[in-house]
Amino acid sequence: MRSVIPKQLNPFAWLERKALFAPERSFRGNPDHVGLEYADIFPVANDGVRLHGWHMPASASSESRNAVWLILHGNGGNISVRLDQYKAIRDRYGASIIAIDYRGYGKSEGKPSESGFYADALAAYEFLKATYPENKKIVFGRSMGGAVASQLVSVVTPNALILEASISSMPEIVRERAPWTHYSPARFMVRSKFETTSHVASNSVPKLILHGDADQTVSYQHSERIFAAATDPKQLEIIPNGDHDGLDLVDPERYHTVVSEFLREHDAL
Image (cartoon, rainbow, N blue to C red; front, side):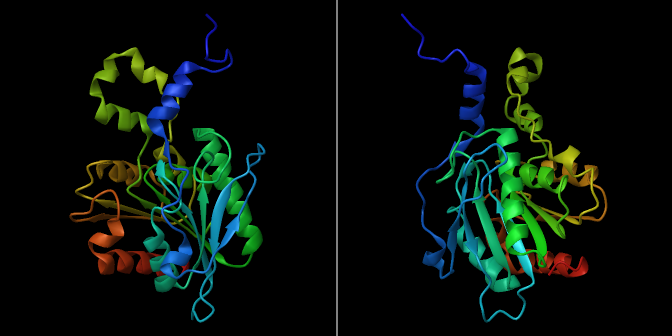
């Protein structure tokens, strides 16, 4: 009986992809549902994969239209998960927003992978630069997206990097959730590293690291490790009672005060 697994497909790579990535193809809504003007964008990564994202320009009535944010989401869902946060960023900071889906997520082509995510983030940033060449640029990454954002900032130079509930590395996640793998060959089967700690140690971009102390998905110790490894300038903010999703919703005024003061201090607002 002939195998249904192609010879060129590594079964461990397939299992790893299933374990690490949880993409959604269907959208939970679009920016219009929260009152944001938007346009579909289709950047192409350097390996030819066609991506999909949203471009949400600043309001024409905004007093400050000088900054643009690139949003890199986590390993689950797609760009439609946090529509409310896009609106808060646009309204509070007068910013334009680019949100991109990685390969295999939403309407983006391809299959998820660590190297693919990095290529996708770079394609989105190049689109952002071409669209807003003179504007201040802020790269924002959440959860696994924090590792993607950090790797991006190791090869480009935005005005600021914001990491929210980021993982410090995939090996640390495996060690925490499956400590028995430390003594098992299984730990060698996960080839994806997503090593935020190594990426933040290689540049002088201002870094704001946010985490909740009640995060049951990615412990706040990950952000402490990231902060310890990061080069200056850097700032760590642990938010009491903050969980993994919706950290900005626990205490919105504190959250946005920290963000706005950080951006103002580093001339990125």
